[in-house]
Amino acid sequence: MLSKIPFNMDNLTKEDINRQILRVGLIAELDAINLYEQLASLTDDEKIKKIFLDIAREEKTHVGEFLTLLLINDEEQEDELEEGKQEVEELLEEEEE
Image 1 (cartoon, rainbow, N blue to C red):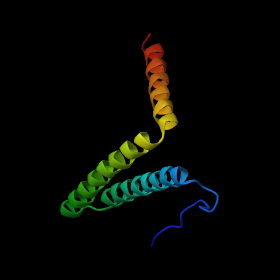
Image 2 (image 1 turned 135 degrees about the vertical axis):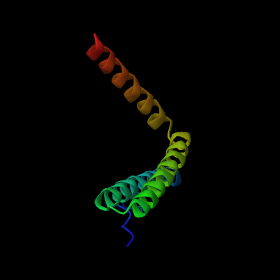
Image 3 (image 1 turned 180 degrees about the vertical axis):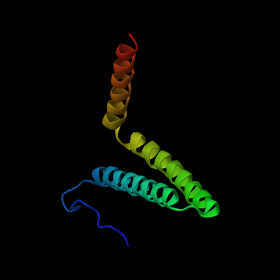
């Protein structure tokens, strides 16, 4: 079952649409990772678990692909991602002191 795209495309520019569809792709891949890892944790069959975890890893690659495209198409997102990384590093450094 496919989810509905959670935004109205009528008032968006082409650039906005591209950024939004990349974010929807990211959401879909993250949902898939969660689903496959949860399913893997429910089975005691090691073969089934192995396949679900392998598929989850493939979805993580897809996250990287969509994120790379999003960062190419949204400079603000790239800047904010770097800002978030710096904030985490600062907080972790404070915690170590």
